[in-house]
Image (cartoon, rainbow, N blue to C red):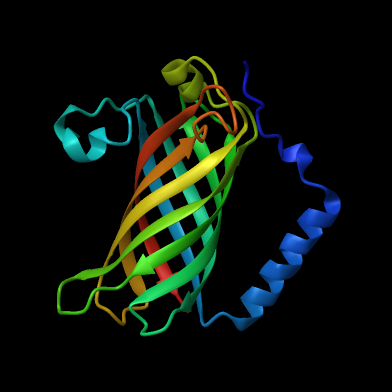
Length: 195
């Protein structure tokens, strides 16, 4: 029995308008605004290999650059925060499309004097202007709209306005929810400025 793929067209105009309205209201109440620039390289490996076999990563003949705009709200105790980030990513080399990602991020800021500013996990949607060539090569197929998630470590003094982050950038078929096949990973290094 085949799985039904998620379609971005299934979101009605009213739903999209409601989401934008909620986002606008949340942005007005946010305490931190952030702008980030980042670059990275896609790999053929599964995401687990980044941690269990980092010396055996197979880098693709491609690169990416991106720009993101986000808002962040501290949660009780200020050790955790919740945020939302809008990303625009451009690929070069093996694939040349543009990708739009909209993840929500949960971040944890450990206490102490370590240069680790935060650890974060983001989850949302990713939409590519064309089906990514690397995903077709890696998985035998894909779709323009997939699940997006990211794991991130941010470095810098605790109260710094400018920080550096390392991120695992991941598109996923969501165990068949969004497409039969698809997904890929990229290693990303970025610079973030908070206002």
